[in-house]
Length: 127
View 1: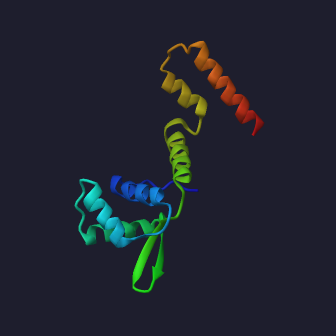
View 2: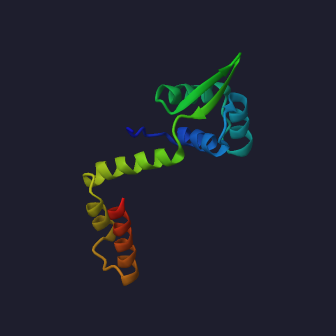
View 3: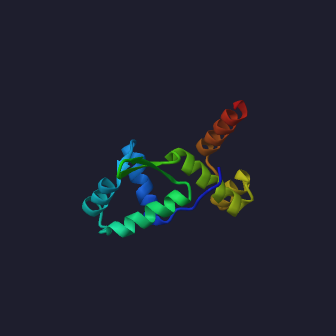
């Protein structure tokens, strides 16, 4: 799955869709953002976001008569995996070893951290 970078507003919409876990109407989304967040979006603003997100393949539209409902086209876990892979590829040539080395910053790991990493490697080896 190719990573699609989300704007902060698009991510906010996706978070609501993921949390809801079922189709949600345009009106419900607009009401949510205008009453539960500090955003005060107009109908056109939300409509623009949803249209762009549909074009990117992030949301699917379910049409029921004159009304539309929206559902995410990917799970939050799928998005996070794709985002993590893109980060790794962009910054560390896809190498977990290079990433861990950079994050470690030359510091010595304590025995507990070393054991956690060993356990993780053993789990990956079994897969």
